[in-house]
Length: 583
Image 1 (cartoon, rainbow, N blue to C red):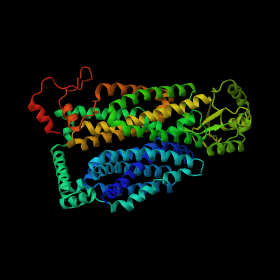
Image 2: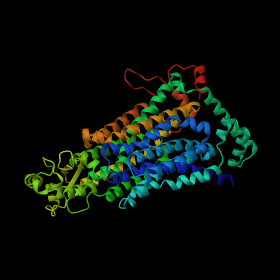
Image 3: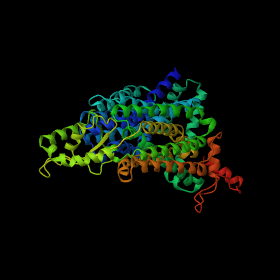
Image 4: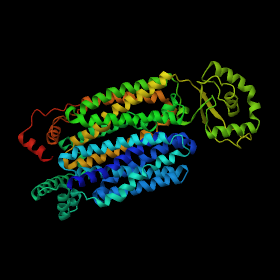
């Protein structure tokens, strides 16, 4: 009975991980449909992606206080309700700002539920199961990413399919709302609120062991709570026990986790793949679904082998593979002459495949006003340039593009990447809606190399930076201050995720897609250097041994901007005892 209760509690709580991963995974595919359905510009696409992350950042700052004050179980139910409300707002009101507000609410929900669920799982699970149960949450996150990619592909060819994809999160959210109140509270939370009798009864239900064993575990929890009360938030920024350096290592890891490009290459995967040769929503979304499969496949061996190999080795290998894969992807985008217009807008094939609604409407409008004939003379020269130079020197307007649509049936490999610059109707009396049309050809080999590079990158991230950063964070901070440290680092993580995701299209417009991806390769190499120089080896050591060693190491050498994780040559027994006492 106790085992089933723990399994039920962990399973329902881990649905938060599934929801978080699902929301991250669906972004890539639904963005292709949203930008067509709502006619989103580049900044609006960035805002649609960033809204989820902004909400997550805002709640991550105060989420710890909410969870500690109102409890883990209540917080999980609250976030599920918030997720339902935000999803319905996004789906039922078909305009841009309700979509942004709804996505922001969902981001708040997923961030808070992530904090509450991880704490709840760790606190209701027995010590022997705790590691596997926490890893189960991480596994649910990557399964959610896969599910998000998969449903995005299933509904990619359906009218308003983005509504169905966004609605997929409603089922687990409603399940949490209905079942979570029936499950036990966290015994640790009850003790922290000085509800000792309830804590004893709850722990007895969860463990099903003798009274002596329950009392012993309660005593251990009380000791840990006492240690937490003795260390405040500001202790993170003090030199005592080298806490500042520990915070530096943790903060730098999550910073590098984001600037190596994972948020963008995940959120904009389908968009990038369309720009390098996957010319339909369905093809690009299906190709990006492979990223979800690889993400699951990369996470499983990391979970199984982390205790044997150690997080530092995984981080080093992952950094090397990420550097090589992003460098390869950058070279492919450079070779295919990909431009930002192909990232912001829908490519249009010349061989009579369906084109975007707005583009077709503009052509019909232009034709009705006689622009076809007025543009014909200019078109002859532009079309000559097009035949001999796939990147025309002058943009075509809609009437010219329509003429090419009927004049190039045998050029099946040509692709238009069109971007509506403005709705200029009435501005100059002509009602012209200009199109910036570029033509590029991507060979099949480059197309598949780009996909393989993305898959390799995601696999490397999934067994290294994805799970291992949080393993390191859980090991380098003492028990009494670990929760506060993880809250600070998590807020930094969401903030960097937001910054990176909301500037991707803008940076691509300014610098070009190849330059942005090459910068990810450079950051991945910087990650390798940082891990070798700064991250301690924690394999085969207890948390107490790790904390003792870090408390006794030299401070950061500001002259050389590096340090060695070595013990001070002269450390008295009294100092060692003092270091251990702070754990």
